[in-house]
Picture 1 (tube, rainbow, N blue to C red):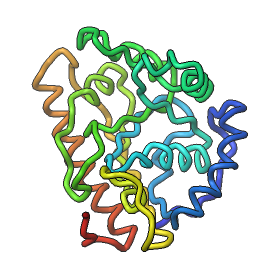
Picture 2 (cartoon, rainbow, N blue to C red; picture 1 turned 90 degrees about the horizontal axis):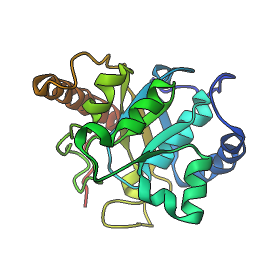
Picture 3 (cartoon, rainbow, N blue to C red; picture 1 turned 90 degrees about the vertical axis):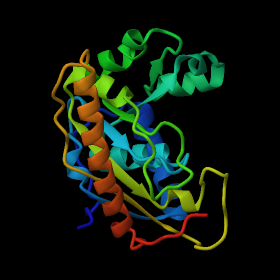
Picture 4 (spheres, rainbow, N blue to C red; picture 1 turned 135 degrees about the vertical axis):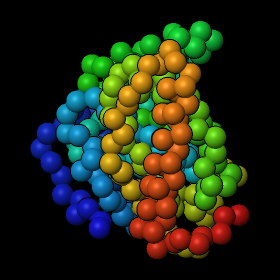
Amino acid sequence: MTDTGSRVSRGDLNVWWRLGVPLVVPIERALFRVRVSGIHHVPLTGPAILAFVHISVLDGPCLAIEAAWRRRRAVRFLVAAEVFEHPVTGWFLRTFRQIPIRRGRSDAGALDEAVATIQRGALAAIAPEGAVNTRPGELQRIRSGLARIALPTGAPVIPVGIWGTHHRWPKSGRRWGSPLRPRLSLAFGEPIEPTGDVSRPDDIDAFVALARKRLERQLAEARKLADDPYDPVA
């Protein structure tokens, strides 16, 4: 069932989010026919992690727009800390409260800022596959970073299937033409409650395997929601 799209009054949007979201929603709707299911799994307050499949550079913006518009939540993506050093980009990222990740540090410390931010009540988002997938119908390897954030925070992980963004911006670059307004679907699944010790490799592997299974389920749901279950990917 597709969610109605009615908005809620609670959330954590700052003034920039509240000003920006009404401006970008019409742009998204002009590019895509949007369908969303399971958005009620995104909590109105408190920490949570959105783990989404990555088939396009548009995945993150579309995910952020829908979560902000429908749940009034600011989505906090993990961004390399050096990007914050650029005057314009850095201002944008800080204004919209993104999370810096300091690369080059040890595995134990690289995600400290993300863990601390989530523990303070943020709604974070991560693409466990890492890079944009060249074969959207098949998940890539799920990286352990998701477990290394989820296990110490204890925050529920909401798997999100996305389908349709690749019609406009696949791995190969921007694409125009038919279909004129492709259907975009986002399928939010039931939260995964993290269990285990982040210092134990077996616990990390078990969580990664579970996350993969749930992401595969939501990817299938997103394709079904888009009425595009057998879409050929160029």
